[in-house]
Image (tube, rainbow over all chains, first blue to last red; front, side, top):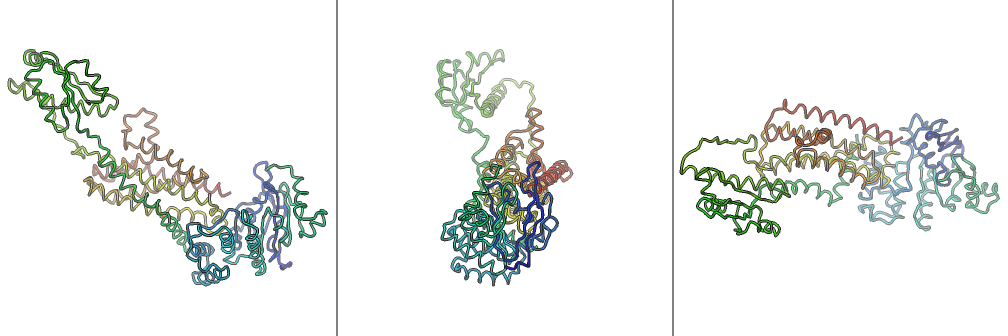
Length: 248
Length: 368
């Protein structure tokens, strides 16, 4: 983690839909190589905030920079420098493993030669060599998630956004999945992750907790526990989420 | 450009992996042409005729023999009581009944005024009118023959000439209809389903976060269905020329040009549907209800729109397939030049671009 190099910075980032303020003046920084946990109850505004950071939706007011590019004005550049994996499994089930890799690598403008070399590398690292020609539909869920994450960072983005990446996965596979996340962070890729599993929150370098569109707490898990006098992150989350006035 | 090509390749993979769908898409035109060409026909054969003949004379016997000798009709029962007529229909033993008056031949020869009553089942008005038409023809023929023996009355004999479709083949009417239906089905329905599928599986999210321009995603979706439609048009035209014997009277280039225009309109309609609905099932229902049924009813494929009430006629005007089918009829069957289909081409072009503007706007709104 390189604390001198800030890759995500927002200032008073706000998104309103009519009279409803989904994201209310949030300000935070994320450093290069950091694993940043983005927590909050359903409806707290996590997804809206993440969409703005990915260049999918323009902020109503405030500003934000991702990988050095303005999220409001340079969304094309932002998109080129990030990876994204969502809660819904998002590779093509009716495409083979290598076809999926080639497609997404091609979308990010990688050259065919590089794609071929990196595909071999990736498959051997994951131990998937024998599955190269398998349709993704016939892989077990845990494998799919791992593959999906590997595809999302295949083009070596500066930042990868993970939207509840481990939903519906068993604890052992989740563990393996987090090992992949650590490996990516070691390579200098910043990981921005939302989750509902509090044990996963403990794995993060820093955690922010959103309540009703605002960031109520932001620190390392250890400091947060100290600050709220709680035993675990679960406790911290309950104490904050209880204050929420918004329903789902 | 490379991005775009890898997208098109992906779309072809999707279609080729789904063997059942591709079989349906390629097989459907063949099945429809065969069903419409051979199974669904307005000709009525093996008509069962019942006769009530209290007169029992030379003339009635001659008419009955003539009816029986006709290749479409068989006299199956001779009734003795007029009351039996109803029961014979109830039991479904006859399709049409002929009732002669008493002293038929006497009346006919002396007063020249003999009457005969035809009774048939009116539940299906089309069949009923075809049946009475058959029998009337036989009666007329018999009358001429008999009266010829005595004297020749002055009479006007119309000689009918049917333009464009001298054989009165149903195929001339439905081949353009099937073309409209198939193109609409493949382009609009399949395109909308395939776009909505990506929303459902979550892959659309990934594509939107990627640097690909959304318009590329949409255009790449349309390419394989465009190719499939071209294959289907070729199949339909080959089948109709070589199997059904419907010739292409006009310019093939013009026919293909108009078809490409209609494919464009249908693809845009598919895009519009995909921007409105959220699930594949909804996409299928929307294209089924909003596109296919109106095409069947209002395009003039089955029922002529000229006979519809004013309001329904105006509704039929907004169905793109109506104009396409009309243009195909003019070009393919009547062999007309481009100047005669300018109206249809103009309307389709206008519809295409209006729909394109609306759906691109809706598509961009959805992205926000």
